[in-house]
Amino acid sequence: MAITFLEQRKRQQYMIPLLVLVLVVTSLVVWYGVIKPQQPVSTGPIDYTSPEEGLPSILKKVDIDFNFLNNFTTDDFQIPEPISTFDKEVGRENPFIPF
Image (tube, rainbow, N blue to C red; front, side, top):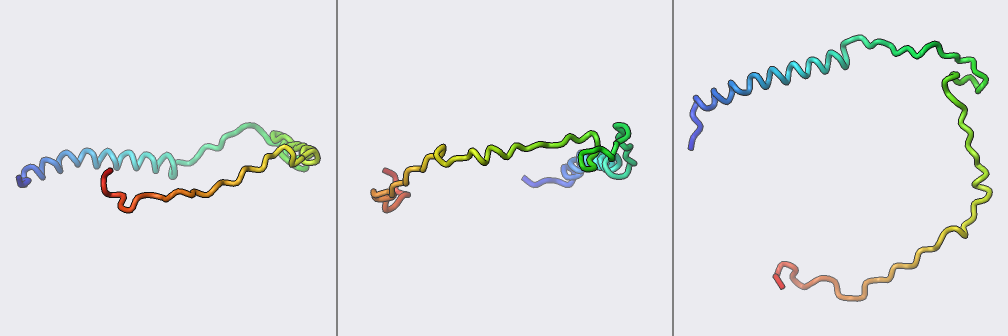
């Protein structure tokens, strides 16, 4: 069954509003994501003269306790058992023949 010219034209008329919708959504995404000037988020003044090596006062100093490395023993680990090899014959001569 051949598609007539009228059916093609009718299908194109349905696609025009879809194309316009896609263009509007794309332009809105570009406007709000790229073109529109961003408002800076203000959380208040940041004091860059904190005693923690010049870090901003809103950042906290991270203390990592490395003493756990001194108490580290390998007795806690178990050596895995070796995997045995497969001794049986693998597969069939022709796998495409049903059983």
